[in-house]
Image (cartoon, rainbow, N blue to C red; front, side, top):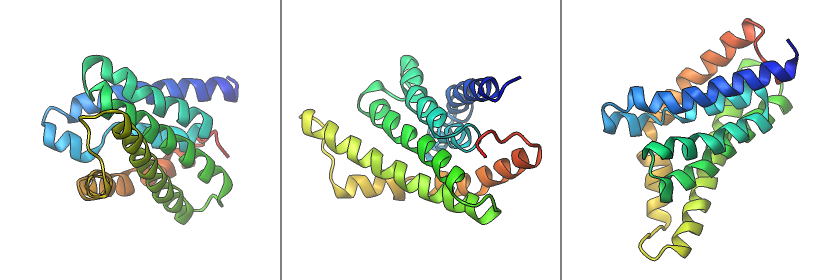
Length: 176
C-alpha cells in the first residue's frame, strides 16, 4: 500500500471519528461541548497525514456533522470549519517542521490549538459583521476560545500526545 493510500485511508477514518465522537460523548450535551471531541481526530490527522489532509478533514467534519444539526451550520458549524481546518493544517505543518522529539509534539499541539482558536475568532468576527443578530467581541472570543474550552484543552493536551507517541512507535506516522 502506498503512502498516499495510507494517508487517504487514515484521513477517511479521522473524518468518520470526527463525525462519530461528538455523538458518543455528546449524549450529555454540556460534557460533549466542553470536551470538543471533534477536534481530537482532526488534530491527530494533521500529525499523522500532514497539513493538507488535516486541513481537508478539519474543514469537512463540522459541515458534514451539521447535516444532522450538531453543530448548527450557521454560525457554529461555519466558524468551526475554519477553526478545525486551521488545527489540521497547523498540526501537520508544525509536526513536519519541528524535531521529532516528544517535547515538540506538545509544542506543535499547543501552537496548533492557539492558531485554530484565533482562526475561529476571526471567522466569528467576520460572520458577526454580516449577521445582524450575532454579537461577537473580545469577551465572547475569550469565553468561547479559552474560558469555556478549558476541559477540552486539558483533554487534548493529555490525550493527543500519548496517541501520537503510540502511533509513532507503531510506525504509523506518514508525515515524517
